[in-house]
Amino acid sequence: MPTDRPTAAELVEAVREFLTDHVGPNVEGQLAFHARVAANALAIVERTLAEGGAMDQAEAERLRDLLGRDGDLEELNRDLSRRIRAGEAIGDGGALLEHLRRTVQDKVQLANPRYLTPRD
Amino acid sequence: MTAETAKDKAESPAARLQAVLAEVAAEHYGDGTRIDGLVRLSGGASRETWSFDAVTPDGGREPLILKRDPADQTGEQTYAGVDSRHGVDRWTEGRLVELAGEAGVPEPRVPFYLAADGRTTAGFVMQRVEGETLGRRILREEAYAEARPKLAFQCGQAAARLHGIPAGRLPPLSIMDVGGALAHQRGILDNLDHAHAGFEYGLRWLEERLELAGDRQTLVHGDFRNGNIIVGGDGLRAVLDWESSHIGNPFSDLGWICIRSWRYGHFKKPVGGFGEIEDMLEGYEAGGGGRVDPRAVHFWEVFGSLRWGVICVMMAFTHIIGPQRSVEKAAIGRRAAETEHDLLQLVD
Image (cartoon, rainbow over all chains, first blue to last red; front, side, top):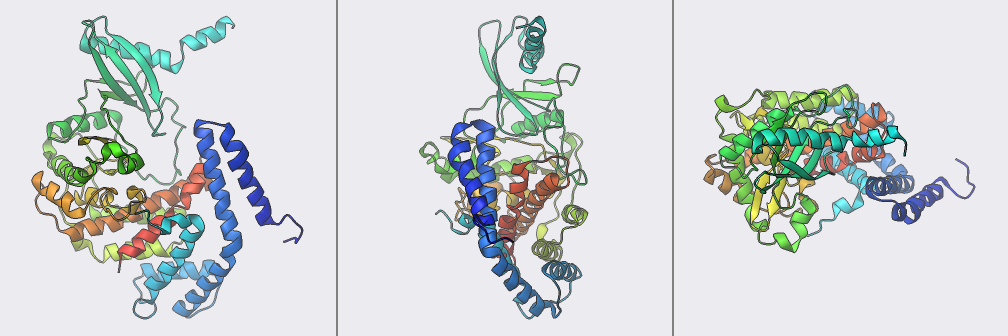
C-alpha cells in the first residue's frame, strides 16, 4: 500500500463524512436511510483497517493451537467448521467455545461495537 | 403535458387500484361505495400495503388496509439458490388472520379479498387497527408504558390460541419438523459455500439436543415477534405478517420472539424487549397451550438466533452473487455477527 496521504483509512473517512454531513441532510426517505447505511458500512471499513490485522493474527494463532496445524485464516476456519460438523472433539474443555466467543466478540466490535453495550 | 402523459397519469398504479377497490368494495358494502384517501404505506418491501377508507352508501366509513403482492415482482429478491421463507400466498395469509381472530387472537376482521387479474395482484383487505408496530417505539414511548408490562402475557396467550386452531380448519401449508428446520438452515449455509464455525457450533448444539425441542406439530406463525404486532395503550391489538406460517413446532414461535435482535437494545427483557419468559409462559397456559418447559423456549431461541443469522448471510449473498445489488443488503450481512454473538452466549 502507498504511504502517501491521504491513507486508505483517511479516504474512507472523508467519504463517510461526505455521506453523513452533506448527502444525508439533503435527501429524504429511502435515500436518506441508504446514505446512513452506507456511512455505517464505511465505519466498519475504518474499524477494520485500524483493528482487523491484529484481530486476524490473534484468531489464526488460537486456531493453530486448537487444531494443531498450520495454514492461513481461511483454511483454518474451513477445517474448524468441518471438524465441528463431524462432531470431533476439538481442544480441551471449553477451549473451542472460548475461541468462538473471542472471535465473534471481535467481529461485533468491527461490525457494530454499540451492540456490546446494553441500553438498560 | 401531452395527451400521452395525461393518460399515463390516469392509469397510475394508485388510480388503477382505486378502481378495482371501488368495484370489489361495492360488492361487499353495496352499490355506491366510494374509496377515499388511498395511500401506499412504507414498510415491508416484499409486499405492498395500502391504507384507505371505504365510504359506504349510508355514509359510514370503514378504515381498511390492503396487503397485496407487489406489482413489480423484481422489487425484492433473495439469492436464487435458497428460500428463507415458506412463503404463503396472500389469500392463505388473509384466511389465517380470520382463523386466528376466531380463535381469540387479537386480529382485524377481513371483509374481502382481491383476486389476481390483469389489473391487480392478489391481496386481502383487513380493518385498519390503530396502534404502533415499530418495535423501538413500543419499547420507548410513554404512550405504551402501561401496555408494556402486559405484552409478554398477551403474546403468550395469543400464541397458544393460534397454535390451538384445529388442523382440519387450516388452509394447505408447508410442513417443517425440527429435523427439517435444522436441515433447511444447514442447506442454505452449504449452498453459499461459506465456512462459518460459529453457526456450525450452533447447529451441532441443536442436533445433539433435539429432545428439548418438543414434538407437537401445530400451526406456527413463523415470524412472531416485536415488530409484527400492533400495540395500543391498552396492550396487544393484533398479530401481523403471517407470510412465514407453516405447520411445525409451536415452541419455535416462543423462542423467536425472545431472540436478542427483536429486543431493540432492551436486552434485559427477553420477550421482545418488553417482558419476562415466565409471564409469556403463564399467558400460554392461560390461552390453553398447557405448561411449556422453559428449556424448549431456550432451544428455539438458539435456533432463532441461528435462523436470523442465516437470513442475514443470505441477504449479503443476494448482493454479492445476485440477483440484487444493494448497500442495505450488503450491510445487513454483517449483522450476522450479532446473532452469532447471541447464539454463542446461549449455548454451552
